[in-house]
Each structure stands twice: as C-alpha cells, then as structure tokens.
Amino acid sequence: MDDVLEIADYFGVSFQACLFRIAYRIHAIPGNTEADELRKRAAKYEPEKKRKRRHMTYTKLYAGLIDCYQEQLAFKPTDYARYVFQNEYIYNDSRMEGLDITLERASEIVTDLRLNMQNSIYCSVDKKDEVYMSIAGHYKMYQEIFAEPVKDSLDAYYLFTLNKFLFSHYPYPEFGGSLRQNNTLVLGAKFETVDYHEIFNELAKVDGEVREFFSRKSEIPMSEYVEHVARIHHKITVIHPFPEGNGRTSRAFMNVQLVRAGITPIYIKVEDKKEYIAALSRADQCADYDELYEIVFRLIIRSSVNLQKECLFTGM
Image (tube, rainbow, N blue to C red; front, top):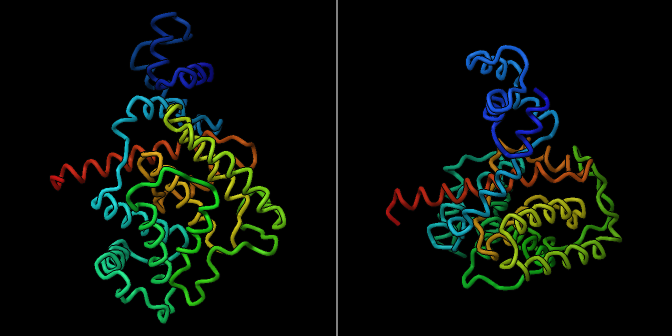
C-alpha cells in the first residue's frame, strides 16, 4: 500500500484509482482483490492521513490545473471584484490577526469607507478602537492594490508603502513604513528573524528576484510565477522588516504580485490559519515549499470560482 501511495503521488492520481489499476492491469496487489475488498483495504489504510504524515501534497495536480486554465484565472480589478474581495479579505485577515469582528461589521465599515471616503467616521484618528483603525488601514492598502490602471512595474520596496497605508489611520501614522530597530522573536515560529542590521541587504536580494520574475511573467507558466510569489512571501516573513504588521503587509504584497501579473488575488480564511502557519513552518525547517505552493494554488482557484459565481448570480 505504501508503494501504491508513492506511485499515485508521482502521477498525480487518486490512491484508489491507482490501487485498482495496479490490481487489475498488472496484477501486483497480493491477497483478495475483489472490488469491495479493495475498497475496504483502501479505507483501512487511510491514504490521506498517510499523505499528511509524509508531507505529500497535490502541488503537481494544482500546478497543472493552474497552467491549463490560466486564461480563466486571469483577473481584472473591476468595481464588483474590489467590493466582494475587500469585504472577504479584510474580514478574514483581521481575524487572522486576532481582531474580534463579524463579517457583517467588517462589511459595514468597508462600505462606509467606500461611500464616504475621507468623510467616513472610521477615518478619524480620534477613534482609539484598534478594530476600526486596522480595517481602515486595510481598506487603504487594498484601494491601492486594486487601483487602475494596473501598474506594469514592481519592486520589493513597495512593502514600505503598504505598511504605511496599514497604519495610516492610527494615532501615530508615521510609525508605518519604518524599519524595526531591534531583533525580534516571533512567537510560535520555527525560525529566527533576520538581524535588523541586515534587513536592507536581504530586501535587496528579494527585490532582485521580484523584478526578475515580474519581467518574465508572460514568458513562464503561471504556476511557476505563483510558486515564486509563495517563496517571496515566506522570505519576507523571515526578514520581518517592520516593528508591526509584517503578516498583513506580506500577505498584501503577495496580492500585489498576483494582481499586477493579472492573476486572481487570494485571502486566507481564519479557519485555514493553522494549515497556513504549518506550511510556513515546513518551509522554515526544511526549505520545503510544496505545502505552501498547494495552499496558494488552491486559494487562487477558490477566489476565481467565487468571483465568477457571484458575477453569474448577479448578472454582472
């Protein structure tokens, strides 16, 4: 059964399909191979649990899907896409950071900001409620990300602009976009952040990769570009350039890279946080990005399907 699992993973097919093929085409499964008995044996083996223990992923399968359907996954920042995506993203990313807010309340704040702009009650720095200040900053970040016309250039130092936007509605907005000035321990992480003296040197390396891949985005498969985006996301979490807001800023920058390449942006549901953190930890410990690739691939497909479904439903 272990061999069947390895073969199924190699060819990107289901365990059961591979088991039946091997049993009936090359007769290499010992014991009772009646159909019902094979299904029972497969269920008892619990292939999905075995896959997770061995850190096997469906990355190859998702990469193939992404490349085959890249035209359908193309993204243009329409008003409707902005509205739907901002509500979902801001709600889930706020929850990822531990803010206690409902989807309805997040949507209410985003809608008020969208309709009233600078006259929104949530733009006042006199409000000391961190939920409001954080969501207002999130909203400003995503107004910039979805701005048209979509910019045809990109560099890693755009991180500073995003971090400034994130803290633009806090009492001391000048805090945003400033580099950390000490070494930080990230609780729960499996890595040490880059020494703060080396932040600019490490960002320069990341910037070279960002520029190179962005310049070749139309020449390489979409899956290859997306894998690059996932790796850059992990590298930025290790560099940890800012005193606060590194997670929100690095996830926003991931979407900047996707949107400017014409790819559907993503958001991580709070329910998926544990899996997302585990994938980053796997990259920390083993330099194995497959689990992170799989998550990002899956989220791109989910976001694209949700946006298309909503557009069809509303007739837009």
